[in-house]
Figure 1: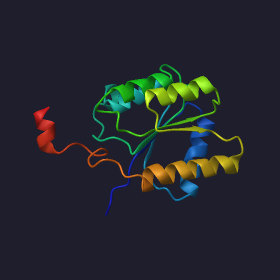
Figure 2: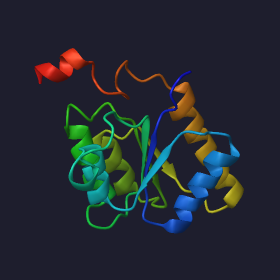
Figure 3: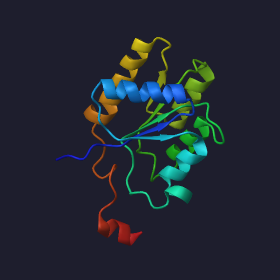
Figure 4: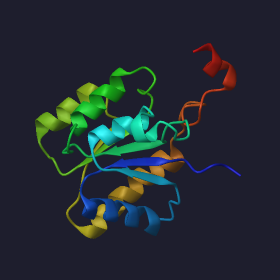
Length: 158
């Protein structure tokens, strides 16, 4: 049986978290979704630091990233991940309410994989999340080993 791929949702709005989880569930995307509420917590999770130091190795199949986050904003999270050779292959989809052209341009300059403006209408929101979830968690083919931990021989050489 193929292991379900983990989705990382970095979102501080409880309402938006609930909408994303509902949309994924309604569309039968049973992937594990890890929810983190700020940029600092997200980086700690991805780099296995502090309270996440013992979490299972491996990267999420996709990161859904809000831009307006407490502690460390989404642009900084994006910049750190895309500038790190060990993290840059993780697909990052900015999921934001910002239609600001400078945000859009900056995200693409930093290497974002997709930029999705959160629709206001519930049904449009569900459809957008369905599309994002289906593409990144089911259709997209990541490089071999990008989601799971590296083979033992590679880990030992580091």
